[in-house]
Image (cartoon, rainbow, N blue to C red; front, side):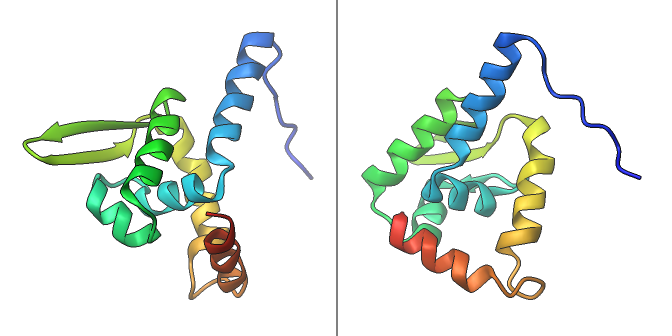
Length: 119
């Protein structure tokens, strides 16, 4: 028996959900979020993980920040990023389980290739 899913009914709530999903739907931003998970990471670690340029990653981090999904803080010359919206952690966790976990998912290599091609 399936549990009935309650979707937001107010226009503002629907727009907020759509905006968050749009922000995380880009391959590079999804890769950043899968890497962050529930941990705080230095932007240089994100750069190393994604293999992208600093300007490109900075732009994607800014999109995620404006969408209220991640937060960043500066300590001297280092910028730290972490998930801001705790409600999205279960979604990101499920995405990681399904697409980002190499040992448990045979589709990870395909997803990684797609992320590299598109990102």
